[in-house]
Image (cartoon, rainbow, N blue to C red; front, top):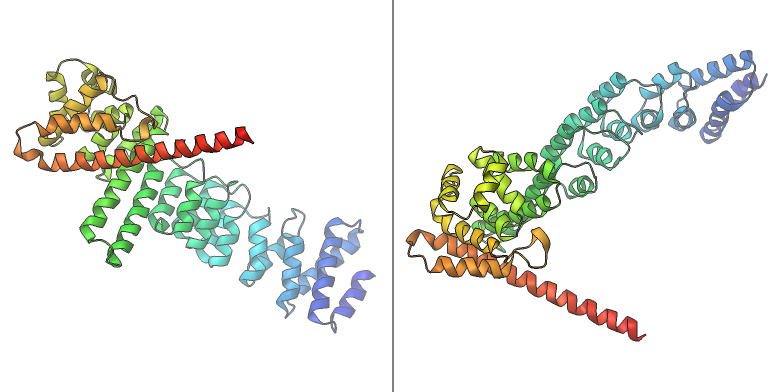
Length: 387
């Protein structure tokens, strides 16, 4: 009997040879046409090999049996309770585990076990939620890089909350297509806070200056994200911005001066607690009384009203027709608003004028970059045509 010969030989064989023979025995059990007696003997031999002193042997057994639904359950469970390097392939591949087994392993296992479970194909939401809640940064990275798993939005938010400051996890999350717009904005905020802290810590900028730059970067990102988000999904993003204190007059004015009218109207509707259709009607109405009432109900700073009034007037006159879509500040529109506001005899307008000048500088630089890019592109096209 082959198994009897194997058991006699394995008592004196070196560990590396025992590992190779164990792998062959396990494959024979799974794929060879063995008699019932030989199958029983092979299973008994594999159970005995669970006590082999060499981890090479037990790892060979795990590698051979891990992915098979025909593997003996007792052996799989025993391997899962072994050292992490032996249990990992079993947890990563075995179809014999139910969700409860995997959730328990996430809670009680170490980093290697959590990462192995996170790499499983078609990982259920319940298990992904357990990893998001208690898993290590490494296992959460493996999870978000596993595009075959089902991760609930609240689990993604939990990962962002715990590890959003880590660049690798931010990049992996942003690479996923199922990330909500609000979560993308949270990741941008985490990045901005990290960079601001780094720059201030190196004394490259004063802390307040670094915070202002980070805040403006977040506002710019919010407008860009909103421009790429379907209107039906803008609500959660707006509510997130409001709840996190980011839905400021500066952000709303940036949205308007970028031509993102949808974001502008949705933001006012959220702050004023009014239907978007009603807000849109007031914004596009030629009168100013309704707009002023809307502005006051949204509780925006009174000193910013002249800028919004002039921006809406410029929008009605068609000054939004500039390159860059709804993500880039419109230079002509800003200059129009800045000129009109400078003529206002209101002392409280000083902070607003400072903001508008920063917007004007940003718009001019963006326009210059766009112009230079077009020149380079035209030059390359010309060279290609000449060749």
